[in-house]
Image (tube, rainbow, N blue to C red; front, side):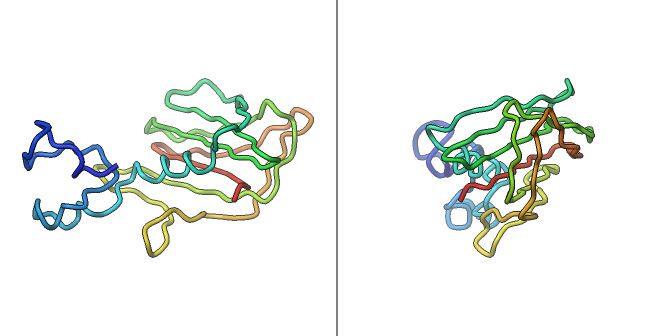
Length: 163
């Protein structure tokens, strides 16, 4: 999770692999104060870990066959999460359909857009943790219904009514 855990040569080198969510030694040891900041890939990973808990029932999502577009849903204890990612640069208009035909209410929507380097757009609180972009949304997948949605290029979306 932290770059400071991994040296390139496995020893005491000051060259680190930059694959973590942050580097706690960025300012002190590497003269880079910005390195202590949370990196964009933390947000989707933390949300997926929290809202796809162990023991969830996983549902397939019906999507158009578009490059870089993927989606999955989970249910646990009557609560639902839907995750959508578009790793491609192109924005897509989709009609999302869920394998389980039901209506889901009270959803929070998290959205994170990747830009060059470590730049991103997405809502965070004062401590740098994810917060919903919108709340109290509903998706109706009953009776073979589909939900129309715009998925921006290089974006991650998570909808959940889990707490």
